[in-house]
Amino acid sequence: MRRNHRNAIILLSGGLDSATCLAIARARGFAPLYTMAFDYGQRHRRELSAAAEIAHAQGAVEHRVIHIDLRQFGHSALTDRIDVPRDRDVLSAHDIPITYVPARNTIFLSYAMAWAEVLDCRDVFIGVNAVDYSGYPDCRPEFIAAFETMANLATRIGVENKTDENRFRIHAPLIRMSKAEIIRTGIDLGVDYSLTHSCYDPTDAGLACGHCDSCLLRKNGFAGAGVPDPTRYAPAP
Amino acid sequence: MRRNHRNAIILLSGGLDSATCLAIARARGFAPLYTMAFDYGQRHRRELSAAAEIAHAQGAVEHRVIHIDLRQFGHSALTDRIDVPRDRDVLSAHDIPITYVPARNTIFLSYAMAWAEVLDCRDVFIGVNAVDYSGYPDCRPEFIAAFETMANLATRIGVENKTDENRFRIHAPLIRMSKAEIIRTGIDLGVDYSLTHSCYDPTDAGLACGHCDSCLLRKNGFAGAGVPDPTRYAPAP
View (tube, rainbow over the protein chains, first blue to last red):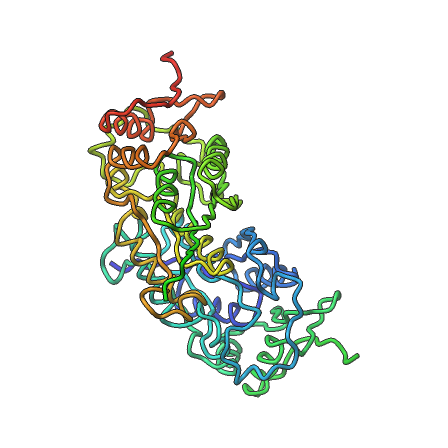
């Protein structure tokens, strides 16, 4: 039996995609909403404060920050001291980028599963995107589907609820959307994108570099959506 | 092409099962061996020192302890201040026990996946057992199979290696063995079980209580294997 009020957990990174994902969960009637961010040794803590602001602005009842140490696995420009690529042709790059963090989304979703067990929550939202991040193995629809299958076997919720209505579900509503579509959707739902942070390599004052993959995708998205970009970019040197 | 030397990662809890699992990985010719333990707010730190001793005794080249905080998800006698059940009829209990930690094995295997990506390792061993722990959803063969499928979609290793020989594999060699069979296997492989720790509720001096589910299964296993039990139990009060 479908419950009238279905809670949901939304993974928040502080970026544009997950902020939109939270707005979509709310628009689909999920309530109350719980948000979860990860402090995984990102070089730039601005993301974490952005996630907390977004959770508050969109009315999440609880926002948790989980401390995990992915730095010990290294091999990513997001956590190591590797130069972040600048002005790449992001829209045609399809290799696994240096900014890929090993097993990141699997670890994030595993923690969400643990929280879901405690909250008796069946619905987890993640803002992965297979269009802009086609080089990341763990941003593809087949990964999300396989994780969902595994999660229903791994949990008390999955074991005790075998019906289609009640099983554990991983929602990835942005997975096939372009950045411009994501932004248009978010604008329609009232997302305040000035709170979001995308840049991999911001200045000490928190201004976006404007040249990393993430800034380029973001700029391109606002241009494509025909919406003013509220991002504060660092002035050219 | 099968590589001559295949490294492997073995999850170690400090208990009897994972110590046997490490010995099996070595006996199957995997080398070098990497071991991984988790500091997840267990109430009893004796497990972690046991894991390090077992790794050293069996010649692991590197032993990592990952700090994760499962306490914030509560709901388990292993991490919360809940009384550990004593003298239960463990061999006929099939409910999900209070000692179940939400999503624990999923989180552990996700970290192993991350390390495997960095080591270019295709083989992860976990000592789960579906016989004695039939009440834990994440100790069942169908969970392990689903995790393996997901892992091959989530990782660079999985994406870049599509052949059966080279894909990412989760080995659970104990999954269908009785505790007595596990102990007999380990004795044949030279495992020093005096280093292992199983008790959920040891004394301050590290003596096993002899009455929790884990002690009962262990005692029963040594009796069934016809092998002297090297465990130091607390004297009856």
